[in-house]
Length: 346
Ligand SMILES: Nc1nc2c(ncn2[C@@H]2O[C@H](COP(=O)(O)OP(=O)(O)OP(=O)(O)O)[C@@H](O)[C@H]2O)c(=O)[nH]1
Ligand SMILES: [Mg+2]
Image 1 (cartoon, rainbow, N blue to C red):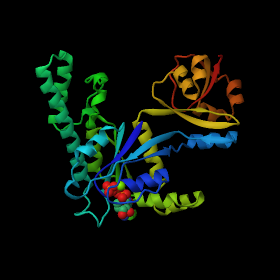
Image 2 (cartoon, protein in one colour; image 1 turned 120 degrees about the vertical axis):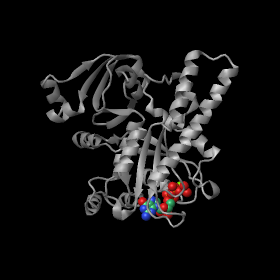
Image 3 (tube, rainbow, N blue to C red; image 1 turned 60 degrees about the vertical axis):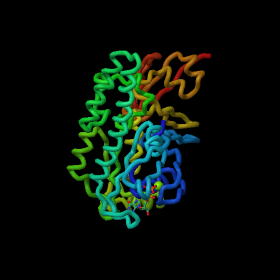
Image 4 (cartoon, helix red, strand yellow; image 1 turned 30 degrees about the vertical axis):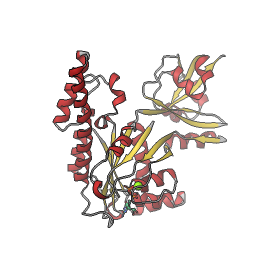
């Protein structure tokens, strides 16, 4: 599972990537595609770790990919190579520049950049769809497939993204291999200059994001880089000075995690407190297999305490005494924040 940081040249992708991963990729002017893992901040894990004082605390991780922007002739467009790199991602984070960058011609215009990016995606998808329909005219193609591609063509010609189509309207089963750009979950990060980091998202931009089915947030990559360099107790004072409640990067990473339709369940104990990423809708036995294949093979039952229940009672023992421990079978659908203890026998 990979999330691509995408956007036009000099919008701050590498600055965001470095701050999240702690890597020191050189800033500015393109460069190579980079991959890094990022810890998903989770206050629930912080709290559980305080309670259990385990030897080890492990957060969920996601992989980000810094896709370089293009400079020179193609600085506002996306080359075939860039499009292919973007197609390989499971979800996209579009970084929009809203700070003056002397290396880039023209003032910052995030709304125009958003439209330009969206249009590139729509046109690239339309090309794929039309090519497929052309082929369908020459080769025998099932009627329902042709109908699906016709429907997609109509949406794209209207300038709308494919993600606007619900699972009922479009069966994506056979379409996965195409990597349609406008169908990818999209998070838009509006990268501000330091002085304006605390200003809310402009309403026109927020409305446009809603129409595109995209999530959005405001951050200042250079402020985030500065925060990351401070000691934990200095961080909150610094945030307060800027009129911010928490680091936007923490929210950014959590939102990106949700974009992949991932949730976390937890395991707790003296040895380790740990968050395990699973897809929403995963059943208990399969989730147990994330921990170890033996747990999936020999699964007997799962003892589950939802995080909120645990916090309300304060300990596993108190939860049991109150009769709130859930005993669940293999088909139980795991919820975000479930604390699970798997009973198994191999
Ligand atoms: N003032 C200000 N400058 C920023 C911010 N984010 C990035 N920059 C600067 O903008 C320049 C480009 O930042 P990068 O992170 O390299 O941008 P990029 O999107 O990776 O650029 P390419 O990979 O070339 O497409 C650098 O000089 C950064 O220091 C920000 O939030 N505020
Ligand atoms: Mg870069």
